Length: 404
Image 1 (cartoon, rainbow, N blue to C red):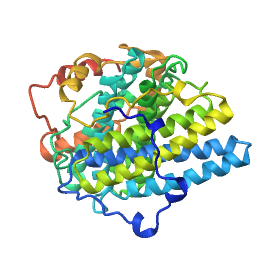
Image 2: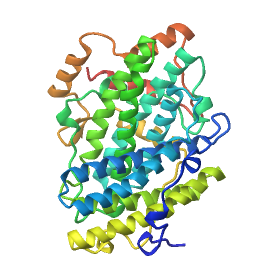
Image 3: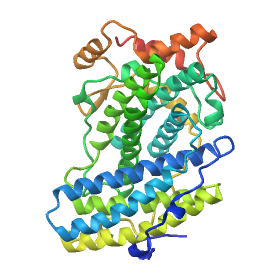
């Protein structure tokens, strides 16, 4: 059945305000909930946070007081939505357990987007990034067993493999080489725009999460690993945000933010196995439909454009969380050696990359390698969760090590 959010009417804005009892949602069960339910929660939290931050930035450059008031009304509702979504996460989960779920999001969300992306240049950007998130999951899983004496397989439930990706120590590039070329706002497919916004929002939320929870650990190796990977998340946000055409007007961006929220809530409503969470996705979709209607009105009034010119006549196929094991193994086989140069990708180390490596490493073992060494010393091997078939990583890891 086709669904065009522009043709739907949602809950009127003045009826969207919720009281404390309604905001006080029950969290999901950390031991029995579907791992992908937690992934959907983490994704939508990042989407809501991005919408809020975007609205604040818009308000700071907007000279129309009436528009600023309208943005403030919507933004307060978005803040309530963010609180409901994020508060679905179980309080008894440690920050490190939540971190492993964050990296499961990064792996399976980005892999799905890469598989569905119609633009080859954008597809390559997602394929490049996902191999780094894949390795972060591996590093954090080893840390988890070291400091909490538990295995990540309980969290990812075999849906996502845990094994080395592109080694984290090779993720530290010169900042200039993290800037990609943007899509063209006039010719890019709406799906491509939503993909870029979705992955950027998820990576931004991961960056902010690590920036805040990293120093809460007492174990030096944990503090150091969070610090290292948090710096790489800065690179990833730069990588993905640069894909967005800077020529998009504020009104276009507002419309796309609201449309993308409709798309994702609608997608997750289709797949959600937890009835309580599914009801929240449905409620928020009906809120977003009205917020989209207001954004469409603002676009017509201030940009002189019809939103139907910018958006598809119906929602694309739902965004799904699902295993991407074969796809990721294919990328490990073919792309583990890549690094970036300018807005493109190369297989050989170059001067800027080597200077950055030398400046950061200083001849010392980085935390991402130290945690694997520590795990091997404590347990005799590193922690991995491989669910099928032989893994080609040893040779590829050796190829990667030839770059420094």
